[in-house]
Length: 165
Image (tube, rainbow, N blue to C red; front, side):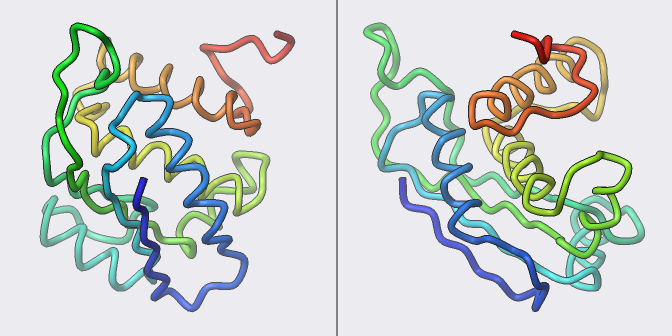
C-alpha cells in the first residue's frame, strides 16, 4: 500500500506511523490490492469545519471525513474476483482536536481514537455507509469493530464482539 500522511494540525500526540500501519492493515483485511494508494490528512478544527460545510452542508467541525476517488470493492485476490490494478482510494481527513474531546467518553486515549477514525474513514472510502442506519450501518460497525479487534485495539462497549473471546 502507498499511504501518505499530511499533518497540518500542529496537534501533539498524533502518531503518523501508527495511522499508516492501521490503514494498511485495514485495507489488507478488506482484500484491497496491495498497490492501492490513499492519504490521511490531519487538520485543525477550522479546516475540517470548512470541509464539513462545503461537502456535507453541515455546520461545525467533525472527527473524520472521507473523500473516495476510485471505486473499488474488496476481493481482488479471490479466484472469481475482478483483478483491478493499483488505484487511488481517496483521502481520509482527521481532526485530532475534535477526536480528543471524544476520548473521555470512549474510555481510551487519542491514539486509539485516531486509529478507530482511520478505520472508519477507510470503510467510507470503500463504500460503507452508516448515515441511513439499518443493516448497512450494522455491517459497517461490525467490520469496523472486527478490524479494530484484529489490530489489537478493541472498542469498548462493542455489541458485535464478545471481549472475552
